[in-house]
Image (cartoon, rainbow, N blue to C red):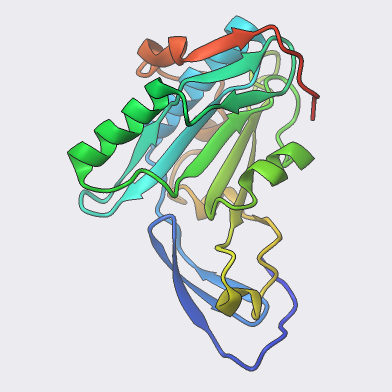
Length: 221
């Protein structure tokens, strides 16, 4: 997570996905909140099932809830295109407005800003140009899941995005996504086989119908 320093300012402290981070010239330092394994297995189980069912991409959103020291997750109503790597979420959809309003009412906080997880179905995980555009103004961590169907282990790409603030941009390039290692987002003691296993839970399968197939063809990544 390095960039070129361009300022005399020594450091800026920020919150990133609820975690304390320090930005210094050319460096980002801090420890992100770890994703618990039960949550990860629910995430994998949901996204893999969509990949199996539609051979198509899906998206979920995640934010740190400081009061209870845990991540909250939201699966919005979304449209995906069969057999292609494209997914669209319309936040003006009344169903998604309801989800956001219900969250704000229950927790007395807005759900956004949030981190994201999406899939590349059965190809490798990486940040595509489309991903970069989608994530550019979403500070936090972002994950791509790939190789979800015909491989022995899933592929995972992790990166962070910084807030586009002047005080930060004078220290590092806020237009870049910075790749992070798996240990930056999971407890280092976790067995890696658990993280990359194709299996998952059915905990979120009651939300599978929030992913709808459209006949519209979008450009692949």
